[in-house]
Length: 396
Image 1 (cartoon, rainbow, N blue to C red):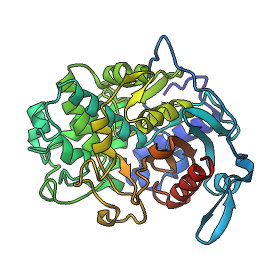
Image 2: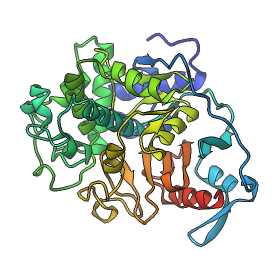
Image 3: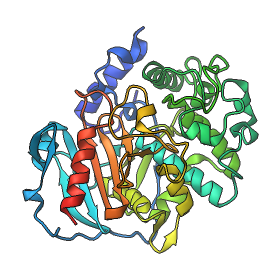
Image 4: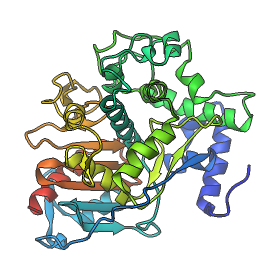
């Protein structure tokens, strides 16, 4: 295995641990999450930027951030305490399109590329919305196998884009086991040059992945849905996912920072996770949604899609928080987005280990959080939501 000179000593250790886990019978189940760095073993495609990037201006908030406090669980806390407790690596706050707070914990800086984890699912959702706007996909209620007939081979047969986006495809999939198995099968395939393991396409089209329940009848979070969506999207638009992502989203939002996207041996993109971008790029993506799909003087994705993807008002069939097994609090689920209960109309992009983009359109506020929060199970931090709402109130 060749490692780039730019890879740190910690990444070398992580690579060794990952390689050992690949060979072990139990694989990822015994691997500490802080050592799970797929980018040290799998390739990444570079995502280019616009030739005329839009730089985010900075501004001083109306009230000093140092004085901000919020209450959670009956305890009053400062933003510094939140950052310490949540193992925050970077935090960026936009108010009215301007950076009013930016924190980077050493060795991270404003040019660091942070693993998105499942925030990439919300980017995938955006591209589906754009494909609908462009009539490459006729309807969100279309069967995905009408675009990618190979999906009819297993439990994805007849599943619509909407059902997969809402995590109600009915596919039989154990997220906490099968997701890790997918990674290690793809790594095995990469290093054996196809002699063992499986590609992302083969994992998505596995005939043994049958239907567990009727599509649309139940919420069941399964990352493999995102790979199926991307397969149908690629057929609909006629170009590889990375190319569509770069042209229709990354260059369109005008970020000055390049990004990277994890791929398998065949250059198929991971779409359920594993984009790598700066906090400023994530903030611009959040600002796109805070402004109803409009950024840099153009409508990048329709207001209709933004509303349907992120709110119960836009689509009453989106899953309310009470319907989500294993989760509590304010987060429901829409078209791969996490709408939040209450009357604020806010919603989030979320990734495991504490990655989030909290978008509060009524306040024109976006809060990007990048964390290494490995000690707290789940990515859906109610405290982060409470802090974000309180901070938006404070910045009014």
